[in-house]
Length: 226
Image: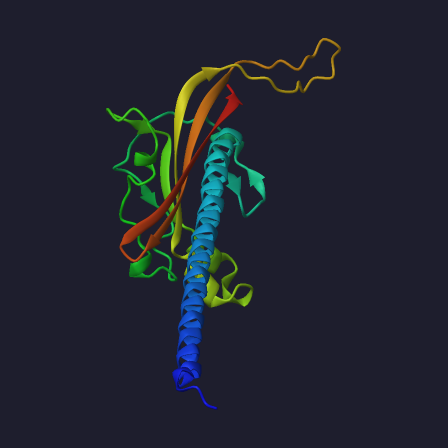
């Protein structure tokens, strides 16, 4: 005998199960999209951090090259006659030098017009502030000009052109310097003469079109002998 009360039960059950599965599928899509976006942000931060480290290294290298003498590419020697310990003479942030912005691989979209982006990331003396040097570089253009798309795919280089690094260097004054002696005499020790300390401020910057999305700021101090 057929129970009329059970008519249509299978259809209702199917609709309920379909609704539950749809909700579960939608939830999984939302969770997956959130994880993907989070991973992208993490990757962008990591890349920006690496670019900020490059800024510090380039700033430190600048001071060392000034101290040891500029490197001559033609004869692979340093020009010892131009050795110096630079002073704070550059007005900043108005005089941020855009170093590789005139490259052939640099498009109008790659320009970072803000010269005070890195400057505003630090608590520095903003009254009549002078530094040794202040430079802004496009990270992707450096790779494009140096190794080109033969080693790195052009699509990857174009992504890296969204990243910039800026650094500025401040001479902070005298500081104790300890280095190794160059004499072979018995009385030669490890304590050198006093030195000059420089603080290097470096930033990695990610710019998407006209908006700055991410800034990572780092700083270091180096001491050079007088």
